[in-house]
Length: 259
Image (cartoon, rainbow, N blue to C red; front, side):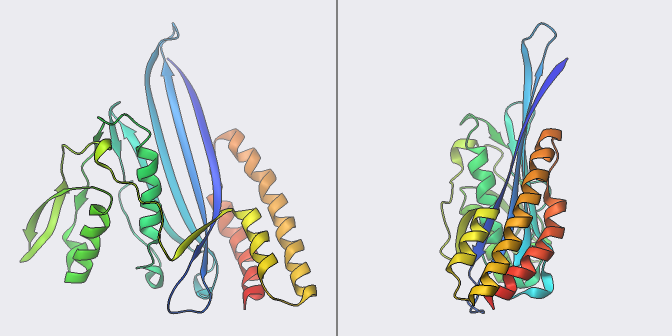
Protein backbone atom coordinates (compact mmCIF):
# COMPACT_ATOMS: atom_id res chain seq x y z
CA UNK A 1 0.00 0.00 0.00
CA UNK A 2 1.32 3.43 -0.99
CA UNK A 3 0.09 6.82 0.15
CA UNK A 4 0.30 10.39 -1.11
CA UNK A 5 -0.14 13.22 1.41
CA UNK A 6 -1.06 16.79 0.51
CA UNK A 7 -1.42 19.58 3.02
CA UNK A 8 -1.89 23.34 3.07
CA UNK A 9 -1.40 25.78 5.92
CA UNK A 10 -2.90 29.27 5.87
CA UNK A 11 -2.71 31.92 8.59
CA UNK A 12 -5.21 34.78 8.59
CA UNK A 13 -5.68 37.85 10.77
CA UNK A 14 -9.23 38.23 12.08
CA UNK A 15 -10.75 41.45 13.43
CA UNK A 16 -13.53 40.94 16.00
CA UNK A 17 -15.56 43.94 17.14
CA UNK A 18 -16.79 43.88 20.73
CA UNK A 19 -19.42 46.38 21.93
CA UNK A 20 -17.75 46.52 25.34
CA UNK A 21 -14.57 48.09 23.93
CA UNK A 22 -13.63 50.95 21.63
CA UNK A 23 -10.95 48.84 19.94
CA UNK A 24 -11.44 45.44 18.27
CA UNK A 25 -9.82 42.14 19.16
CA UNK A 26 -7.36 40.58 16.70
CA UNK A 27 -6.94 36.82 16.34
CA UNK A 28 -4.50 34.82 14.28
CA UNK A 29 -6.38 31.92 12.69
CA UNK A 30 -4.35 28.98 11.42
CA UNK A 31 -6.19 26.70 8.98
CA UNK A 32 -4.50 23.38 8.22
CA UNK A 33 -6.02 21.10 5.56
CA UNK A 34 -4.60 17.66 4.87
CA UNK A 35 -5.62 14.91 2.46
CA UNK A 36 -4.17 11.43 2.03
CA UNK A 37 -4.73 9.05 -0.90
CA UNK A 38 -3.98 5.36 -0.40
CA UNK A 39 -3.12 3.30 -3.49
CA UNK A 40 -2.84 -0.40 -4.22
CA UNK A 41 0.54 -1.61 -5.46
CA UNK A 42 -0.84 -1.63 -9.00
CA UNK A 43 -1.69 2.08 -8.78
CA UNK A 44 -5.44 1.79 -8.20
CA UNK A 45 -6.88 4.16 -5.60
CA UNK A 46 -7.92 2.26 -2.49
CA UNK A 47 -9.42 5.10 -0.42
CA UNK A 48 -8.85 8.71 0.61
CA UNK A 49 -9.04 10.65 3.85
CA UNK A 50 -9.11 14.37 4.63
CA UNK A 51 -8.88 16.57 7.71
CA UNK A 52 -9.17 20.23 8.60
CA UNK A 53 -8.00 21.95 11.79
CA UNK A 54 -8.58 25.55 12.81
CA UNK A 55 -6.62 27.12 15.66
CA UNK A 56 -7.36 30.67 16.85
CA UNK A 57 -4.86 32.54 19.04
CA UNK A 58 -5.40 35.96 20.66
CA UNK A 59 -3.04 38.26 18.79
CA UNK A 60 -3.77 41.81 20.01
CA UNK A 61 -6.53 43.99 21.38
CA UNK A 62 -8.12 45.24 24.59
CA UNK A 63 -8.02 41.84 26.35
CA UNK A 64 -4.27 42.11 26.90
CA UNK A 65 -4.34 39.58 29.76
CA UNK A 66 -5.02 36.76 27.27
CA UNK A 67 -2.40 37.81 24.71
CA UNK A 68 -0.99 34.70 23.02
CA UNK A 69 -3.60 32.38 24.51
CA UNK A 70 -5.41 29.78 22.42
CA UNK A 71 -9.00 30.94 22.01
CA UNK A 72 -10.46 27.94 20.22
CA UNK A 73 -9.49 24.77 18.35
CA UNK A 74 -11.91 23.00 16.01
CA UNK A 75 -11.55 20.36 13.35
CA UNK A 76 -13.28 17.99 10.98
CA UNK A 77 -12.44 14.82 9.09
CA UNK A 78 -13.75 12.27 6.65
CA UNK A 79 -14.72 8.91 8.11
CA UNK A 80 -15.17 5.49 6.53
CA UNK A 81 -14.98 6.68 2.91
CA UNK A 82 -18.46 8.29 2.70
CA UNK A 83 -18.94 10.12 6.00
CA UNK A 84 -17.90 13.57 7.24
CA UNK A 85 -17.28 14.47 10.87
CA UNK A 86 -17.75 18.16 11.68
CA UNK A 87 -16.14 18.26 15.13
CA UNK A 88 -12.98 16.99 16.78
CA UNK A 89 -14.66 16.35 20.10
CA UNK A 90 -15.69 19.83 21.19
CA UNK A 91 -16.87 23.26 20.07
CA UNK A 92 -15.61 25.44 22.90
CA UNK A 93 -14.35 29.01 23.30
CA UNK A 94 -11.60 28.76 25.92
CA UNK A 95 -11.54 32.47 26.86
CA UNK A 96 -14.67 33.38 28.81
CA UNK A 97 -14.58 37.08 27.88
CA UNK A 98 -14.62 36.24 24.16
CA UNK A 99 -17.76 34.11 24.23
CA UNK A 100 -20.79 35.42 22.37
CA UNK A 101 -18.74 37.20 19.68
CA UNK A 102 -19.43 34.60 16.93
CA UNK A 103 -15.84 33.34 16.94
CA UNK A 104 -17.07 29.76 17.29
CA UNK A 105 -19.58 30.31 14.49
CA UNK A 106 -16.85 31.67 12.23
CA UNK A 107 -14.65 28.63 12.79
CA UNK A 108 -17.45 26.08 12.53
CA UNK A 109 -18.60 27.84 9.36
CA UNK A 110 -15.17 27.24 7.84
CA UNK A 111 -15.53 23.53 8.63
CA UNK A 112 -18.97 23.47 6.99
CA UNK A 113 -17.51 25.20 3.91
CA UNK A 114 -14.78 22.55 3.80
CA UNK A 115 -17.34 19.74 4.16
CA UNK A 116 -19.40 21.04 1.22
CA UNK A 117 -16.64 19.96 -1.19
CA UNK A 118 -17.58 16.32 -0.67
CA UNK A 119 -20.40 14.48 -2.49
CA UNK A 120 -23.86 15.71 -1.48
CA UNK A 121 -25.01 12.23 -0.42
CA UNK A 122 -22.21 11.68 2.10
CA UNK A 123 -23.55 11.29 5.63
CA UNK A 124 -22.72 13.61 8.52
CA UNK A 125 -21.40 11.74 11.56
CA UNK A 126 -23.96 12.41 14.35
CA UNK A 127 -23.10 15.20 16.79
CA UNK A 128 -24.00 14.57 20.43
CA UNK A 129 -25.25 17.24 22.84
CA UNK A 130 -24.48 17.26 26.57
CA UNK A 131 -26.67 18.54 29.38
CA UNK A 132 -23.64 20.47 30.64
CA UNK A 133 -24.23 23.00 27.86
CA UNK A 134 -27.92 23.40 28.73
CA UNK A 135 -27.85 24.31 32.42
CA UNK A 136 -29.47 27.70 31.76
CA UNK A 137 -32.18 28.56 29.23
CA UNK A 138 -29.88 31.05 27.47
CA UNK A 139 -27.00 28.57 27.21
CA UNK A 140 -29.29 25.88 25.81
CA UNK A 141 -30.83 28.25 23.29
CA UNK A 142 -27.42 29.50 22.11
CA UNK A 143 -26.09 25.97 21.70
CA UNK A 144 -29.11 24.65 19.82
CA UNK A 145 -29.33 27.73 17.59
CA UNK A 146 -25.59 27.53 16.88
CA UNK A 147 -25.95 24.17 15.13
CA UNK A 148 -29.39 24.78 13.64
CA UNK A 149 -28.09 27.89 11.84
CA UNK A 150 -25.90 25.54 9.78
CA UNK A 151 -28.80 23.27 8.84
CA UNK A 152 -28.06 20.61 11.45
CA UNK A 153 -31.24 18.99 12.77
CA UNK A 154 -31.35 17.31 16.17
CA UNK A 155 -33.41 14.67 17.88
CA UNK A 156 -33.71 16.30 21.31
CA UNK A 157 -34.52 14.70 24.65
CA UNK A 158 -35.07 15.91 28.21
CA UNK A 159 -32.50 15.43 30.96
CA UNK A 160 -32.47 16.46 34.63
CA UNK A 161 -35.84 18.13 34.11
CA UNK A 162 -34.59 20.30 31.25
CA UNK A 163 -36.40 20.08 27.91
CA UNK A 164 -34.23 19.62 24.80
CA UNK A 165 -31.13 19.37 27.01
CA UNK A 166 -29.47 16.45 25.26
CA UNK A 167 -29.70 14.79 21.90
CA UNK A 168 -28.00 13.70 18.73
CA UNK A 169 -28.08 15.11 15.24
CA UNK A 170 -30.29 13.37 12.70
CA UNK A 171 -28.38 10.30 11.41
CA UNK A 172 -29.96 10.87 7.98
CA UNK A 173 -28.26 14.27 7.67
CA UNK A 174 -26.07 14.60 4.58
CA UNK A 175 -23.63 17.13 3.14
CA UNK A 176 -26.47 18.50 1.01
CA UNK A 177 -28.33 19.56 4.18
CA UNK A 178 -25.50 21.76 5.47
CA UNK A 179 -26.06 25.51 5.19
CA UNK A 180 -22.90 27.65 4.86
CA UNK A 181 -22.74 30.99 6.66
CA UNK A 182 -20.99 33.75 4.72
CA UNK A 183 -20.33 36.50 7.25
CA UNK A 184 -20.98 38.00 10.67
CA UNK A 185 -21.45 41.73 11.16
CA UNK A 186 -18.83 42.07 13.90
CA UNK A 187 -16.12 39.95 12.23
CA UNK A 188 -13.83 40.97 9.38
CA UNK A 189 -11.34 38.63 7.74
CA UNK A 190 -8.27 40.75 7.02
CA UNK A 191 -6.41 38.20 4.92
CA UNK A 192 -2.96 36.66 5.31
CA UNK A 193 -1.76 37.73 8.74
CA UNK A 194 1.48 39.41 7.59
CA UNK A 195 -0.11 41.51 4.85
CA UNK A 196 -3.11 42.28 7.04
CA UNK A 197 -0.92 43.48 9.89
CA UNK A 198 0.90 45.84 7.56
CA UNK A 199 -2.43 47.21 6.32
CA UNK A 200 -3.68 47.75 9.87
CA UNK A 201 -0.55 49.66 10.78
CA UNK A 202 -0.85 51.84 7.67
CA UNK A 203 -4.35 53.02 8.55
CA UNK A 204 -3.75 53.77 12.24
CA UNK A 205 -3.22 57.42 13.17
CA UNK A 206 0.04 57.27 15.16
CA UNK A 207 3.26 59.29 15.35
CA UNK A 208 5.38 58.65 12.27
CA UNK A 209 8.43 57.38 14.17
CA UNK A 210 6.37 54.90 16.19
CA UNK A 211 4.56 53.72 13.09
CA UNK A 212 7.81 53.16 11.20
CA UNK A 213 9.23 51.19 14.11
CA UNK A 214 6.16 48.96 14.32
CA UNK A 215 6.23 48.40 10.57
CA UNK A 216 9.87 47.36 10.72
CA UNK A 217 9.09 44.90 13.51
CA UNK A 218 6.18 43.47 11.53
CA UNK A 219 8.32 43.02 8.41
CA UNK A 220 11.09 41.27 10.35
CA UNK A 221 8.75 38.81 12.02
CA UNK A 222 6.78 38.28 8.82
CA UNK A 223 9.97 37.23 7.02
CA UNK A 224 11.02 34.99 9.88
CA UNK A 225 7.66 33.27 10.13
CA UNK A 226 7.36 33.06 6.35
CA UNK A 227 10.58 31.06 6.06
CA UNK A 228 9.64 28.77 8.93
CA UNK A 229 6.11 28.37 7.54
CA UNK A 230 7.54 27.26 4.18
CA UNK A 231 9.76 24.70 5.86
CA UNK A 232 6.95 23.32 8.00
CA UNK A 233 4.74 22.91 4.95
CA UNK A 234 7.45 20.74 3.46
CA UNK A 235 7.53 18.43 6.46
CA UNK A 236 3.75 18.40 6.86
CA UNK A 237 3.60 20.11 10.25
CA UNK A 238 1.41 22.95 11.52
CA UNK A 239 2.72 26.29 12.69
CA UNK A 240 0.28 27.12 15.47
CA UNK A 241 2.80 26.41 18.23
CA UNK A 242 5.10 29.02 16.72
CA UNK A 243 2.31 31.56 16.38
CA UNK A 244 1.64 31.41 20.11
CA UNK A 245 5.13 32.73 20.76
CA UNK A 246 5.17 35.18 17.88
CA UNK A 247 1.75 36.53 18.89
CA UNK A 248 3.19 37.60 22.21
CA UNK A 249 5.81 39.78 20.51
CA UNK A 250 3.87 41.09 17.52
CA UNK A 251 0.65 41.43 19.48
CA UNK A 252 2.38 43.63 22.02
CA UNK A 253 3.80 45.83 19.26
CA UNK A 254 0.43 46.13 17.53
CA UNK A 255 -1.29 46.74 20.85
CA UNK A 256 1.03 49.67 21.57
CA UNK A 257 0.26 51.19 18.18
CA UNK A 258 -3.50 50.73 18.53
CA UNK A 259 -3.70 52.30 21.98
